[in-house]
Length: 433
Image 1 (cartoon, rainbow, N blue to C red):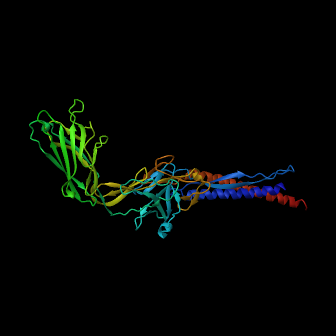
Image 2: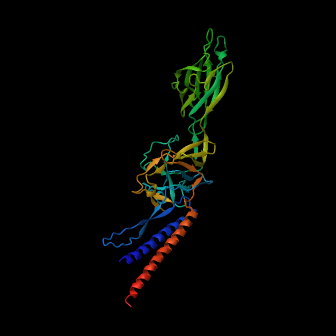
C-alpha cells in the first residue's frame, strides 16, 4: 500500500536528518580542535520499482564522509616542534604504546598537524600519544636513501637535549696573497708562514702550520712557491707539499696557473682543493682553482691573509631543535653550529578522503585511500612542512549553524509526514463506523 511507503519514507527522513545533525554537532564541538576535519552527511534517494503502476516511496539514506583534504588555517605558535603541513600530505606518526612496548613494526598513522614535545627519553610525542617518525641522518648529517613505499627506514625521533657533540674540521679555505716581488732574482727568499687552528674528532684544537717558500731564479721572476703543510697532531710531520705556479698574464695575472703535488693528496683543478690527512682524518684545503681570485694570489709585495675560512667547532651542547620546510630536523648547539639529525617525510595517498579516521585527528591507510608513498616535504605533490605552526579546525561555525537550521526544518517536515499518514490511517479506520 503506498500510504505505508509514505510512512516508511517519513521515518527514513527522520533518521537521515538525525545523522546529519550528529555530524553538525561533531563539527561544532570540534571547532577549536587543531587539525580537525569536517564531517559531512550526504543523502541519496532510494527508488523501489512497482509494476502495478502505483508509486511506492523508497525513502532516503545517508552516508557520512570526512573531508580530510580540506585544510584549516595555519596559525603560529612558540614551540619549534609544533608542525603543520602547508598543502597536501600527512605527517607519519605511530602510537606511544607500540614505541613503549618496543615490539617493532610500528603501525603507521597519519596526521596533518600536531604538537610534539620530547618525553623523559627524548622521544617526540603528543599529549594524545602519537609519536613522530622520521629517517635518521648519517653521522655527517646526510640522509641515506630509504625505501619510499615502506616504513622500514622510519623510526621514532629522539631528541637528546644537553647532549655533547663535536664538529670536526673538514675544510679550510686559503684566501691569501703572496708577494710577487719575492719570486724575482735577488729577493730574500722568505719563507712566510701562517698557523691555522682546526678541531679534531674529539673537539680539541690542533694546528696546521703552512709555510710558503718562493723559488728564486737567477734572472727574471719564477712566480713559483712551495707550499708545505705540517700537522701538530701528527708530531709536526709534513702531510702535504705542493709547488704552486702563478699566472703573470694580463687577464689572470696573480691567480693560480698550476699546482704540482710533491706529497699529500692530488690537486683538483676543477675545485681548487687538495686533501691532506691529519691525525684525525682528511681535511680539504682550498688553494683556489686556476684563474680564481678568491684562493691563493700573488700580487704586489704584501704577504697578507685575505680570507681564511674553516668549518668545525669545539664541543657543544644540544639546546634545541627546529624543523625546516624540507622536513629536516636541525639540532642546534650552544656554540652556534647546527647538524641535521632526522628527516621527516610527508605521506601521500591517491584518495585522502578514503582514509579511515581514528581518534585525535589521525588516520589509517585503507583500501579506499590507496597505497601510500613517502615524499620529501615540498617535493612532488606534497606541500612544505612548517615548524612553529598548527592547523586550525576546518569547521566553519556559521555554515554549520545554517545547516543546523535546514536540518531542523527538514526533520520537522518529515515528522509532519508521519503525523499526516497517521491521520489518514485513522480516517481509513473510521470508514467502518
